[in-house]
Length: 214
Image 1 (cartoon, rainbow, N blue to C red):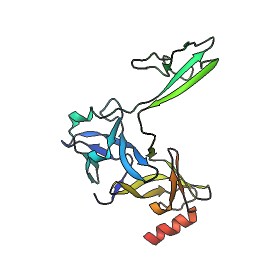
Image 2: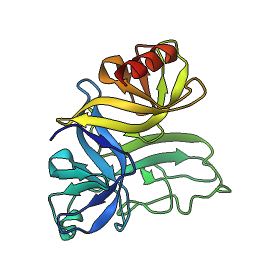
Image 3: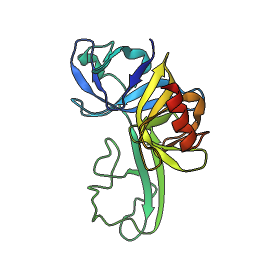
């Protein structure tokens, strides 16, 4: 597959032409910048789904096309990202049992409706995060912050350029330090995490590189 723009938020369609939802996040290996899949937002689905990159068969101006029909999308893995807690105290005591934080815990007990006014557990509280997302990947979203080598924030991710399933560059939306949108080549990316992308150049150097590419 040749180079193409992957817009986080782009629409996703099934092989039979049905609209499924939009790309919420890209799953990227931080060491190789390989895109191994993406998180499909709820859309017509009740839950977010993990979509392997191998299922993408085509890209065009309207988004991505998967190589499966709408009926098969429900079989994709559902994103699990929950928090368990164990508490002992006068207001909420779970004993030795882990319970799911929030209004629903599936097969597990849960803390009930969680609202702004909910009484927080008082006493000894332990928490444990539960996720089926690989620890080998970071999730890049539209709006992921981009920082220069001097620690200054340049702006945020708007589009991601992918070639042969590897990130070849990103488009950074103009921000406080950038006068216009700037295309950043992969060679200037020093590292990435769930929260930010760090460059090995400053904002001024990034703008000069972008103008040179143009």
